Image 1 (cartoon, rainbow, N blue to C red):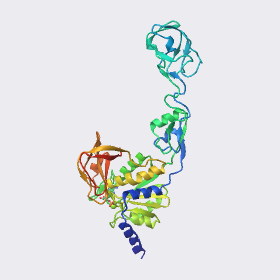
Image 2 (image 1 turned 90 degrees about the horizontal axis):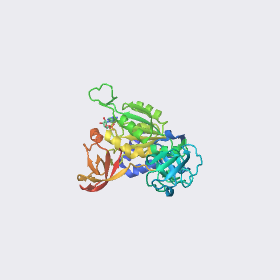
Image 3 (image 1 turned 30 degrees about the horizontal axis):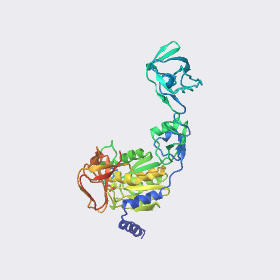
Image 4 (image 1 turned 60 degrees about the vertical axis):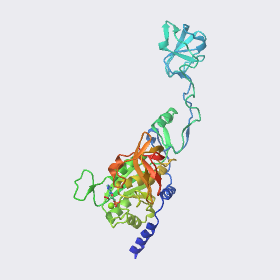
Length: 407
Ligand code: AMP
Ligand code: MG
C-alpha cells in the first residue's frame, strides 16, 4: 500500500514539468541568507559584503607629493629661478614646514605638501647648488601634487551589501584602516555521486564501467562560487547506502547529489530522500539538458538532485544550485554575467524545453561548440559561454543575442 502511495506521489509530480524560471524562483524563495560573520579582511576575499562600506577617510588623506623633488610656489618658480632650500620633508612625519616666495622644500614621494607650496618640481628637473636649487623647467600649479580626497571622497561608496569582495576591494578597505570586514555566511556543501557503473579516477576500470567525473566538476564549481566542499562521497545505486550518505550530509546547508534522479529502476534518490522525510518541491524542469532535476529540503539542508549526464549536471548546477548558494552567502546578484554577442550560425529550438546551448564566445561572436548532447563532456570543455534559447524559438545568423559567461 505504502509503495503504491509513494509511486503515485512521484507520478503526480511527473505530470508537472515546471518552467525553468518557476523552478529557480521557487528555490530562491526557499533560501534564507546565512547569518553574517566578521572576518579578517583577507579571509573575506570572494565573500559578499554584509553591510555597506563607505569611505571614512578620504584618499589621499592629505595633500602630498607624487615625486621625489622640491615643493615650490609655482607662480614664483619660472625657469632659471634660484630658490633657497629651507628644509626637508620626508614621508611619514609632517614637519609643518611653510614655503614662501623664493623658497623650496626638499620633498619625497608621499610626504605631506608644506603650506604655501602648490607644486612639486621633479628632482630630475632642477640643479642643486648647496642650499639653493635652480629650477630648469616650466612649473604649473598643482603639478605632481596629489590633493586630499581627489581619488576617494569621504562618505563615498566602497562596497555595498551583497557585492562580492574582490582583491582590489580588500586593498581599499585596508587603506581605510579596517582590519576586519562583515561578510555573508560560509556555505558548506556535500557532494554525493551515485551510480553502480562509476569508478574513482585512479582505480582500475572493469568492463562496462566509466570514471566518475561529476564530483570533480561540481567540486570545482562550488569552489568557484566560494562554497566549501564539506564532504564528498560516492554511493552505489542502493537505497541503504544512499540513505546513510544523505543522513550524514543533512547537517550541511547544501547537499548535491549527482545521478539517480530520473525514472529508471536504479534511480533511487528521490524515493530515498522522501523516505528520510525530505520535502520534494521540484522534480522535472522544462530545461535541456537537465530535465530530471530535483530540489527538496532534508531538514534544514537544501537538497539538489542533478541528472548524472555531465552536461546536465553542469547546467543545472549553474542555473539552480549556484543562485541558491550565492543567496545563502548574501549575494545581491544571483545570475551569471552576461554580454551581447553576434550569433555566427542559425539556431532553432524545436523542443518544448528551454535549451542552453554551449558555445564559444570570442571577439564578440558566439558559436556553438561540440555535440549538444547531455553526455558530451568534451564539447562542454571547449566552451566558455551559454546561449539560452527558449522553446520554439529560432535565431538567425548575425542576430545579436545575450550570452551568459561562466568563465
Ligand atoms: P543517471 O542520471 O544516474 O541516470 O546517469 C545518467 C548518465 O550519466 C549515465 O550515462 C551515467 O553513467 C552518467 N553519470 C552519472 N553520474 C556520473 C558521474 N558522477 N560521472 C560521470 N558520469 C556520470
Ligand atoms: Mg545512475
